[in-house]
Amino acid sequence: MVFGFDTRKRFKLDPIADRVMEEIKSLGLGEYAEELDEKGYTVLPPDIACPDGLKDRLLDACLAVAENRNGKRPDLNADQAYSPRHADQFEGALGAASGDSPIGDMMQSLVIEGEVFEEALMNPVLLALSTYLTGYSSVLLTMACFIKGPNKTELPLHCDAMGPSPLSSISTECNLTYALTDYTREKGCLAVVPGSHKLCRQPRGEERLVAKNPSAIAVECPAGSLICWHGNTWHGAYNRRSGGLRVSLVIDFVRKHIRTAEHLTEYVPEDVLLRNSARFAVITHQAMAPTVPDQRKSEQNMARAKRVLSAYNQELGVDLQKFEWSPYA
Image (cartoon, rainbow, N blue to C red; front, side, top):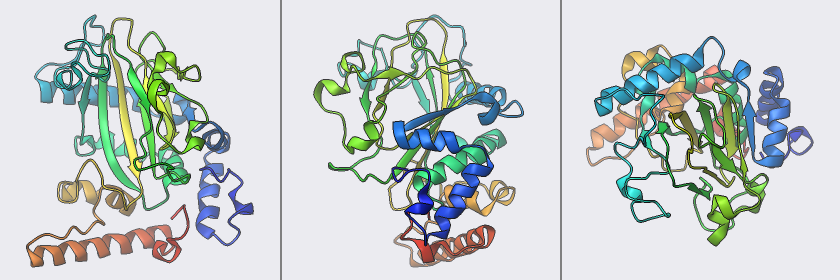
């Protein structure tokens, strides 16, 4: 968060800030939080990000979902482009040649595809950093797997936060990406512009072009790393020059007032909710109360949302509604 890691000096009357700082310190994430403040991104190594074989289990699960949705299991050693469903939208745009996608394939709504995705979402280090950036009440914008093979088109630099300039300096969105295969420049890794979150605006003109922006750098890291960045941070991706596939799992959080890309309110099975915490229910939109033409249904939605929020407050031991002024609530 742009306030700086030693937030207590700025928020002496904010017990929510104190709680977040204690979580960051107890998990040994202080240096990573400081890097988020300064550079707008940070990378957690595999031993911190993916304990107990989480990387291998996530990779296998992502490939299984791709096989189920596309009819064929991706070959990690393939020497050809992999974009079964998303290449056409880039045809003639962003410099993309016919059939050449800068993102490859994107598969969303993975949180209900198996317990390993629930584990990835509720990973304590991931939640600590997402809370640091977007607060305890933040919700899931999307959980998506990206599978990218060799391609020619770079993904232009942009920031995930939306709205007119200047963007809020307080992060309204954060991205946490599990690199499930090695990230290198040759293999089409993430590109970022360090410190760009402080500009509070989208890149313009040639600033958007990875190859022409002298401040853009490659985020190279081994498989199993977790990359986290502020919603204002300029980022894109290099094209993949080498064979094989780049696989990543993206978990994107937004503050609760922002419209989400996925709508999970009525789609998370009851058994999934029962085996997870109240925070999981909040993250997966169970505390949202959409108004619908059916008044009875609207009342049911409101009653469910109140139950979930009450359970979450009890779980945290604090009434978040009393601290909505805090950037960490």
